[in-house]
Image 1: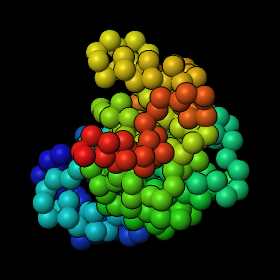
Image 2: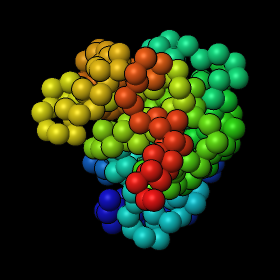
Image 3: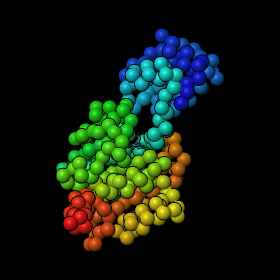
Length: 276
Ligand SMILES: C[S@@+](CC[C@H](N)C(=O)[O-])C[C@H]1O[C@@H](n2cnc3c(N)ncnc32)[C@H](O)[C@@H]1O
């Protein structure tokens, strides 16, 4: 996203304080300019905190390097460009209820943002591995979320189920909505046997009729999974007006047809049969 030149002047002004996770503008701006600065900082992930002791835009991660680069380039990647809608606490609570995490359970969060789900899962004793494509958010995960491992990379291309000796007991996720079906399909490959995936998805998974949506919907239903509707305003706190569901997918059914971690481990042997 391009930064308009008058907004850029404000950000680059030597009086503007950019420190840790805060940006503080200690001088007066006229109202229209202030509104443009505020809008841009919100797009970048900041929130105005008007308390007397703060009076700054506060971000969920350190911003010195990010702001320096944005000012030099005159543009930045907005928080929405990579589909970042942090999961609100009520939805996190519902995910954790469905997942019944017990201490020591292995958990994968494959698009972990700044840890809205991963942090509480680790807090309940889960042994959590996180993947996140955005470098700043990956740095926050390293610092704050109590994960066993944080991988900064692209879950869809950089991570293979066979990178792991065993499947995970739980996969908990709220993937980018633009390709949520691809993320969920890939994530199923990391589930162990008798394991569970719980994912936020746009509610279009329950009604879209293209091949990708129909196949995933059928797979979930055939394997005893379900799509639980979330309240229409569930993502309002993150600034998103979308209808969402929780996809809950178990691999513990007799005759499970999900291509989970065990399927991937056995697959080379199945193919060998045909290469003699
Ligand atoms: C909807 S947000 C949710 C973040 C976090 N799961 C949460 O619940 O707050 C989706 C996240 O996925 C990340 N992301 C997008 N594509 C990705 C990919 N291919 N691999 C890993 N992370 C990705 C985005 O940077 C963003 O942080």
